[in-house]
Image 1: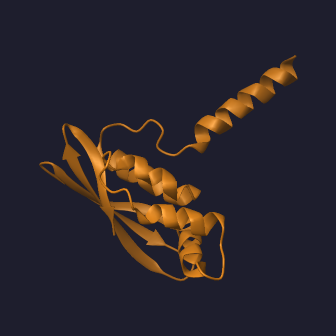
Image 2: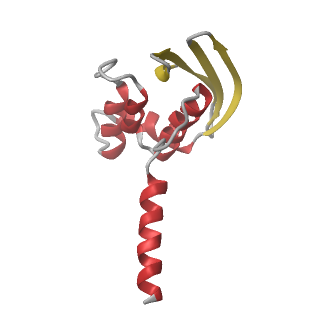
Length: 134
């Protein structure tokens, strides 16, 4: 009986832990961190939930997800880019909120490259949303 309970508990925990950004506070830094968390987990398509509804339906994250899940000769550059995101180390380095706009900067380190990414956010109707990631 204990074994069954442990199995059920571990399945529930893995389901909860598996989704990125499932319960993110309405805070630009937290949303930026959740976005990076999705990148690290290879759950690129999940980033779309941080955009306002109807904002940007054709995101590159759908294409990245497809390339990551099903790499082919045609999409190998996107697949490599996606893999580099999953394997990268991200460190939050700067954050700024200016009214209804915010940006959060992360250093991104891979085995052969150091760079930074900026996560831009906008506040709409009291809710923070992802605007773009550069």
